Figure (tube, rainbow, N blue to C red):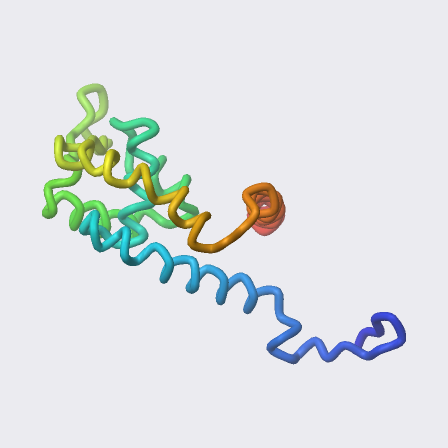
Length: 149
């Protein structure tokens, strides 16, 4: 056990686990997104793919997987489902037929307009200070980079 300010800290208590706090926060945040995702007709992982494609479309599966910190074998079924929903198109690359490029359909592009209200609605629903939220995001980005090493 480690000592913290003359108190012993039990490192095996759930309340002392950083991983649990991150896990619980992630689940609760995803739950807050649910009504907006239902309106879009997508799951949270599909929403993340849309965020990537709204920034830059015509990118490869590997690039999407990399941005989401996922394996391509996790992303591929997700993309196939999005294609069935007519949100994206999967096209062979002209210069390299082994590579599949992901593009938005008109429906996928149209979802962006609906989604534009999500960030501000979430911030107001959380009654969260935007500066504090951005500081936390930056700290988590640092943690992610450390964990990727």
